[in-house]
Structures are given as structure tokens and as C-alpha cells.
Image: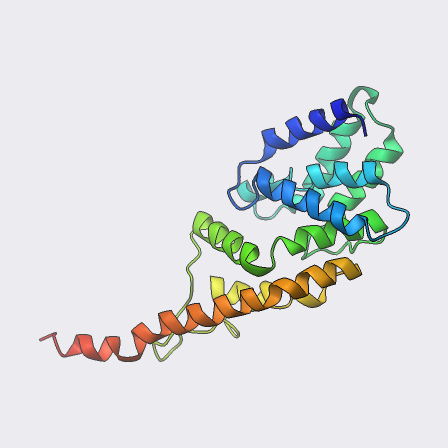
Length: 226
């Protein structure tokens, strides 16, 4: 890929990124991790992979404004239009980039098939694992006003495993905890295993800390109320 082409894509990406949990540094981490994974694979089209990594989250703002939209689908359409504008890239190249973007979403009906799609998927999911994934999840739930946890019928902190209402604990059980078995590449699985214990330890420690306040706190409060 020519440096001028990279810079043009980068500039467009930067103009689209306004989400603290999906900011430009997330893009660069995904790109650099993807290059690591790709170095362990054969037959990778690095031009397609680099473009897809740079542009994979450019549909985030549309989804944030309208949660009914899928940022992967929106981003794929935007990337195709951007890459083919004025004949900058061939339609076939733009279609492959758009395919990677469309398939990168965790909750998607379009699983990755090509090697570039699998690498982008794994690199993006690795950024939701370990300490980085916990930190980004907390940034996001703070941005949208989702609580850390909810209380059960008895007034105790729920661990999130059976919750329907959104919370960090619910997201941990619904998405974060199960990520580690969903990687397509061996390098992706290897990197995920290295990060798993850190995320599990954080969740258990946070659950223990917040739960401890509720064990005797409500009864202690009653002693001071008339």
C-alpha cells in the first residue's frame, strides 16, 4: 500500500472516530495486532487487511445515534463508497474491504470467511479481552449511562449471570466471559489465552468489593433511622 493511500484512509478514519471506547487508538491497536496475527498466516492480502482495520469502526457514530443500526453494515457501506469515490480503488478491492468490515462484529449474522476477515475479527475481539477489554467496556457503559451492576430481589448485588437489564456484570457474562473460545486464528487464540486470567480476576475482585457493602450495610442503616 502506498503511504499516500494509507494517509488518506487514516485521515478519513480520524474524522469518523468520536467514541471514547472506540477511538483512534483502538483502531491502531487492532491494526498492529492484525499485522502480528497475519505474520503467522499465509495468503494474506495486506492491502485489504490494512484498509479494513483502519476503516472497520467508521460506522460507530451512526449506530450510537440510532441503536437500531449495525455499525458493521453502515461502516461497510461507507468504506465501499469512500474507496470507490472517483475511481480511487477498484470495486473488487473495495468489496473485499467492505466484506471484512461487515463480518467483524461479534453479534453478527455474517461470520468471517476469508483470511483477512478472520484476522480483523480476531484482532478486534482481542481488544475486548484482558485488562484492555475491561477498561474499554467500563468507558462505554459510562458513556451510555449503563450501571456497573444491578440488585436482585433480596437487595443483594447480582453477579450478572441471569440478568436481563444491562450492566457491566451482565455484559461480562453475556459477552466478555465467552469471547475466549471464539477466535478463528491460532495466534488470536494464543494471545487471548494470555489475557484471560486478568479479566477474570478483575471481575471477581470487583464483584467481591461491591457486594461486601450490601451484606450488612442496609441493616446497619436501619439502626440509625427512626
